Image 1 (cartoon, helix red, strand yellow):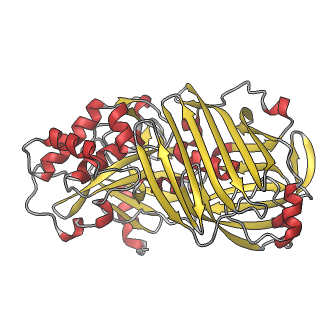
Image 2: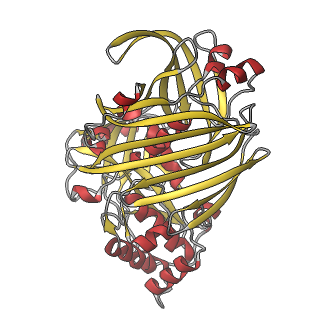
Length: 493
C-alpha cells in the first residue's frame, strides 16, 4: 500500500489541539474585577514559536486592544507542516470581540492550506453560540448550546494562579473551540512549581495540565500568570519568544505522520489468516470503542476477525441497523443535501440490494477521489465537488452517499499497517443483514484487512479521541498459538 494513500487522522486531531493552544479556553470560571483590570492592562503583541521535535516550524501572534467599550483579541498562526514529505503551509486567523468582563460577543475564523480553505463567523446569545462555516464549496450553519455564557481567556491566565494554589487541585472548564467549531470540557490540574529549561534557560514556573477528551497538554505560567511554554502530544511545543525569533522559520520539521506512527512488534499473521490478535498498551482514562463488530477485547488482548462481506442482502434491514445516528445527516456528513442524494442515486442506478449498493458506492469513491493529504475539516459536500482528499474526505463522502439511500454507515477511526508501523487512519463501517462490516474506500478494501484496528466509532468527532493515544499506544501481534490459550485464561472486560 503506497504511503501517499495513508493519512493520519492525528493531523485533524492536532489542528484541534492547535485550537486549544492558540485560542485558549473560551469559558473560564467567574473572573473578579481585579483580574479584569489585570487583563485589560495586557494589550501588547505576544509571539510564540511553534516547535516540532526541536525544530521551529511556525509561530503564533496575539494582540489584545480596546475598541470602544469592548476589547478585541486578534490571533494568527503561520505553520509549515511536513506531511508525507510534502511541505504544507498553514495559515489561521481568529478575531474575537469581548466585553470588559471578558464575555464573548462574536468571532471570525479563517483557515487556509494548499487544498483547503474555510472561514467561519459566529455570535453569542446567552449561552448559545451560532455560527456559519463556508468552505468555498459548502455552507454549513449550526448552533451549540453551552452550560453558561462563554468568556474568553488570553495568554494571561492569572485566574488559574488565584484559584489553584496547591498541587493536585483541579477545575473543570467547559469551552467552545472556533477551530473545530465544537464544544468541549477540559480539566485543568495544578502540579506546583517546576524547574524547566526554556530556550536553554532554567526557569521556575507554575506547571498545569489540561485534559480534553483524552488529549492531555501541559503548560507553564510565570508568576504574573503569563503562558511561557506549552506542550501538546506528538512533540509539539509553543514557547514565548521575541518576534524576530518566533518568525525565524527555517524548517518544516520531520514528517508528521512518521513521527506519530506506532511501531508494530511481533510476527505478522499468515496471508490467508482470518483473525489476528494484538496485545495493546493503552491510556487507562480514555474511553475507546474497541469492543463490538469484528473486534473482541479480553483483558489487554484484542482479536480482529476478518469480515465476510456479503454479496447480497438477505432481507430488510434488521433493527440492529436502524440506529438514528448512523442514518441521519450531520454537520460534515450532509446526506440530505440534494447533490449528495443525486450523486448516490446516479451511482447505484436501478440496483436495490444494499450489499451491492455498498460495493458500487465504495468503488466510485475510491476511483473518483484523487489521493492527497488535505489538512482541514473534511465535509462530504466539499469533497464531492473537489474530488480530492485523504482518508478523512473518503470516509465523510462515502458515509453521506450511503446514508442518503438508507444504509446505516459509521466512521471508524484507529490505525492500519504500513511497513513495520501502524499509522492513524479512518475508514467506514456499514450495517448489512443486521451486522456491521468494515470497508476502506481509501485503499479499496472490502472488507478492510486484519490490520485495521478501530479505537473510535461514530461521526468525525470521534477522531478527537485519537489525540489521547499519541505517544502512549503500543501494539504487539500475538502469535495465534499463544493468543488462543491466553484468551481462555483472561477474563472479559
